[in-house]
Amino acid sequence: MEIKEILRDLREKKGLTQDALAEKVLVTRQAVSRWETGETQPNTDTLKLLSREFDVSINTLLGAPRQLVCQCCGMPLSEDGVISREPDGAFNEDYCKWCYADGKYVYGTMDALLDFLAPRMAQQFGGAPETLRPQIASQLRELKHWKNA
Image (cartoon, rainbow, N blue to C red; front, top):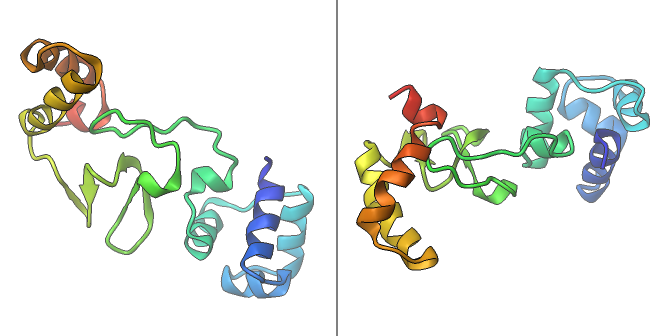
């Protein structure tokens, strides 16, 4: 789906008129109309307001053009329900809700995350946790959170 269809569908599901949505995100009704016809698209600041208003990620508003992956554990963030949030409720599209919660990282070290992941991955995919641990660690080191650690 394109952004124009997504915005119209979300607005209608919430029972808002174009005027009402415009008021909530501080634009004119004409701006909302132009978004819904595909003539223009909301700017970055407005996308943030729309994300809050509709309680969906910006990625969802844009039609999910990016394949989001948790930058801590590597889990695909395929739906908004698993994406983390900041303390103010805004989505943080870099992390899953299990790695980043209430504005804090859950796993203080890569070892702590490996202690959690290795046994579960061994159970799911077979193998011994101690054998999988170095492979998992190698993949984690490529993620933004661990590159910057």
